[in-house]
Image 1: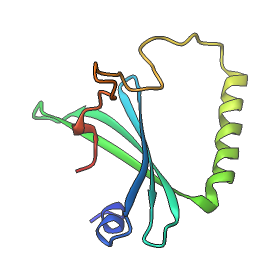
Image 2: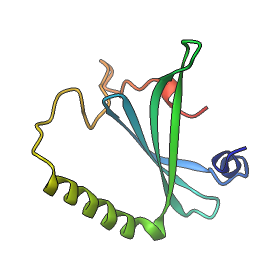
Image 3: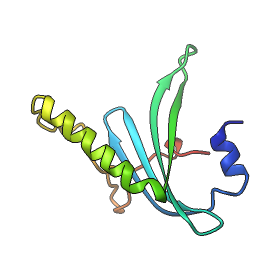
Length: 120
């Protein structure tokens, strides 16, 4: 059992408050705001990549980060500083339509996110 599974099975993974899926090329990022039993909020950031096994069947490789509210400010400062540094040393790259900050919308107006991308 992973730490993540233990965290969720112990009842700590309570109510989902907000969720945002961001598709970026071959990856999908999920930003999920949740609350603990004590009504503290935390953020999970999940990176999901579609991979193919040796048998030719696909699976989703996921990496998850838990970010707690007492760390939000320092995390945001470090993240912003790292992005600014990358932008200062990298050549300017025009955005392509392949990368988007929002999941495609269906005719109903809801995001077209595959449930295969979500944790089971």
